[in-house]
Image (cartoon, rainbow, N blue to C red; front, side, top):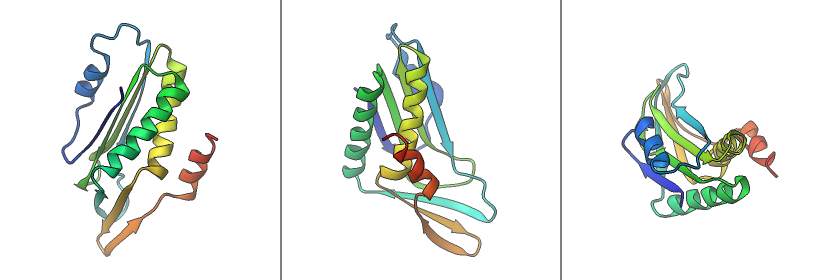
Length: 147
C-alpha cells in the first residue's frame, strides 16, 4: 500500500528509502525525486497550505493510479506544508518496481500530477510583497501528456 504523508517537518531521504525497501527482495529499481524550494530572485519564503483529510485522499488517489498504471511494488509521497525557505526540501516521491523503466516513468508521472492535481495552495513571499501561485501552463501540458 502506498505511503502518503503531508507534514510540516522535513524528511530524510535515507529513512524513506529504507522504509520503502526493507524486506522487499523483488525491488529492482527505484525512481526518486526530491523537490526543493527554488532560489528565485527576491524570494523570501514559500508557504504551502492544504485542507487536512482532503489532501491526503487526493494524494492517495494519485498514488493508486500510479501503482496500477506502472505495475509498482510500492511508492512513497511525502509533501511538506507550512513555511519553507529557498533550498528547503518540499516534496519526495519514491517509486519501487521490479525494473528501472516503470519506476522512473512512475516518478515523472507522479510529479506531473502532483504539480497540477494535488490540492495545495502556495504563496510566495517576496521582498516586495506576497502572491499566490498556480500551476504553470508547462506543468499542465506535462500532466496532460500522460493521457
